[in-house]
Amino acid sequence: MKKIWKITVAVFVVIILALGIGSWYLSKHWKPILNERLQIIVSSSSDSLYTLSYDEFDFSWYSGNAYLTNVSLTPNKETYERLKADNKAPDNQYSIQVKSIKLKNFHPQLLYRKQKLNIDEILIEDPTILVINEHSSEKDTLQIKEEKTPYQQISKFLKELRVKDLNVRNLNFTYQNNSQKEQKETKLKNINIAVHDFLIDSISQKDTSRIYYSSGLDFKMDSYQIATRDSMYYINFKAIDFSTSRKLLKMNRVEMKPRYSKAEFYKAAKKPTDRFDIVFDSLSIQNIDIHQLLKNQRFHATKVNIKRGSLEVYNNANYKRIKTNRIGKDPHQQLQKLAWNFNIDTINILNTGIAYEELSKLTQQLGKVSFNNSTIRIFNVTNDSLVISRNPIMRAHLLTKFMNASQLKANFQFNLSSPIGAFDFQGKLNAMNGRALNSVLKPLAQIEIASANIKSLTFNFKANQNHARGNVNFRYDDLKVELQMLKQGGLISKNKLASTIANNFIINSSNPTDAGEFIKGDVYYKRPGTSSFFNFIWKSIFQGIKSSAGVDKEREARLKNTALETKKAVNDTKKAAKKVGSFIKGVFEKQKEE
Image (cartoon, rainbow, N blue to C red; front, side):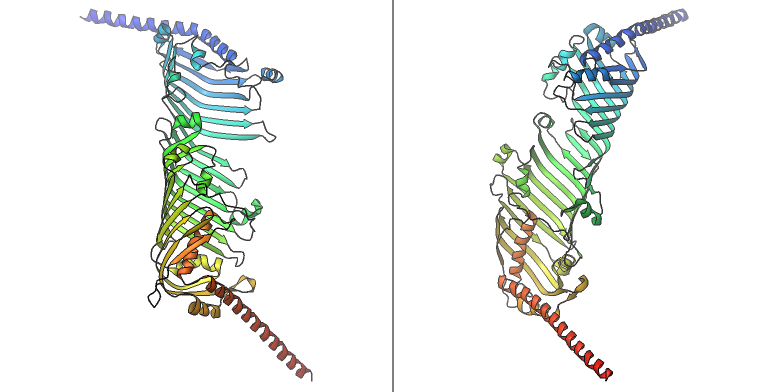
């Protein structure tokens, strides 16, 4: 029995040695052949423009594993200049360095018997790719001149090329544009790419379920930054994760950050404009139609989720704006003008703070209006004519805490097929203390609310790009205002006389009134051509608020005249007092001289 085991073990050892020796022999003699073949393929497919080199190339026929180290693909300058002189140079030159390429189990027997190269895994570590662009009328010579499919290109050598998993780790990519006067560079760092079930054969090119001959591709990058064309902002993306198989794009943080402080921004911009500061902690796009995106440049997705963000808009009114025509430029109208075909079923913006700040030119004080902890849901966001023909209405729902004091609900319905940009909007503001509005009214309108018990405010409008028609129901009591008066040096003081007149004779202190009459604010508001979309909405609602408070056009004119007259009266009184004072002072000075 022991002899049988000894013979068995001896035979097993001999077989292993024979396989090892055979593998060593094949590897040793096939290396120069493969090396020569690789050089020929690279040279012939690029018009001798590129040279392939590496430090070490090792493989085992027995294990089916192989690896290359310090691989380089470099352009030949002399060849490039010759092609350039003949007007045959490619637009792009590529310079590629790779720390290592590892192949796991390339199935030698299948390759030898059936001419099918099946690889379980290819791992490419620390690649660096530089692409230099110089405009040329000819095509990229990394591609074979003839318009052949990938299968036609490999069919002389292989019947099938299949890679189960292709992983690229820590890719650094640089695109250098030399086609313009100023050289521009785009850099992507620390990229990880995973390609699943890559297949080239006679059938795969017709398989519409595949993306670039693969069943799926995953792309991950730590961060990416873009500088806007006007050099006023940086756009930052962090933790980018894109998957074609899951049809999903995720980012952990998205920012549009101004490059200058509020004080320096307008000096750098050299024109009146709004300053934006936008941050979102999370963004995801679900069920992206990858095939439509790649083949037809159509961006279709079912859902976009944006979470935990802030949107701050700042305006310095010291810089006078050039008034431009805004008619026909509302958000839903601009959507129809996008170059790309666009269709998203639902956009959710969750737990987001929105604020608008303005530095008053008159008072030099900052006014602020805020919408805290906002949730915005938008449905049927599209410019796809087929989708619009089936459903022309884009809906938006807003739920927020207005001035961090009261819940505000608003709904919008936009008719995407309307030639005049028709839309409806309705909403309700719950009970709040009116004094919360002083942070915006006092610096920007020179009005302070001394007291106001706002019970509710509802509005309902039908509008288009030209006008709005609707009504406002504003219920409140104990409304008292204090009109402000601007003094020299930008100081603000209370205009007591004008305030008394306004509270007693112009503004209704409650609605319903003390007599029980409820005043409904019916509105027809013709939009000024230079009015923005959001200004148009606010002014329409504000017309109804004024009517509900009893301030019609006649009373509004009286209110303005009262403020001006009392200011003039105060100034005249001061001038008279100054003259009297000067006269008395002169009299005493003369007596002193005598």
